[in-house]
Structures are given as structure tokens and as C-alpha cells.
Length: 84
Image (cartoon, rainbow, N blue to C red; front, side, top):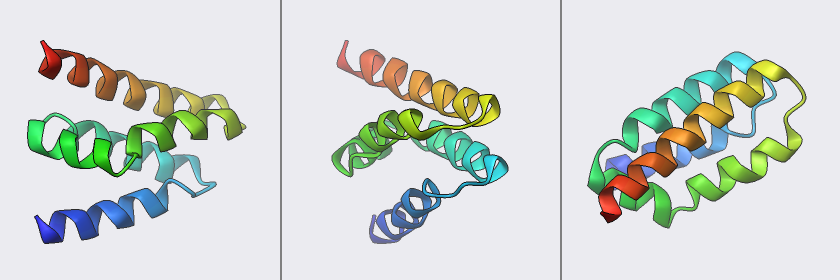
């Protein structure tokens, strides 16, 4: 768990990147991580979904926006599925 949290902090740091390819990779990684119920709990506790939502306000290109929207959609759907 400890190494996962450390890795998560690195991923969250990469969400500040201005490079579309980096954001695309980070969003893809978060979408994969969120598919595990325990991981989803950890990333939710660390406010990753909220960070992604806030990041959509600062997106300057369609490519970045697409990556973020897909990632948010995956996280939200998985949260809904785990709740029911």
C-alpha cells in the first residue's frame, strides 16, 4: 500500500503537466488504477477525481480535454458500479 501511495503522488504531480501526451498517459493510468475497488478508494481519498474535474477548466486543447473526459467518465462509472 505504501508504494502505491507514493506512486499515486507521482501520478498526481504529472497532472500538472502542460504536455498533452503526458496528460493522456496519466489519465489512462488513473483509469486503469481505478478499476480495482481498493485502488479506487485510495485515489478517491486523495482527491484525484476532484483534481481531474478541476483540470478540465484549464484545458487548452481538444486532445487534453478528450483525455480528461474519458478518464473522469471511467472513474465515475466505476464509482457508481461499486456503490451498487
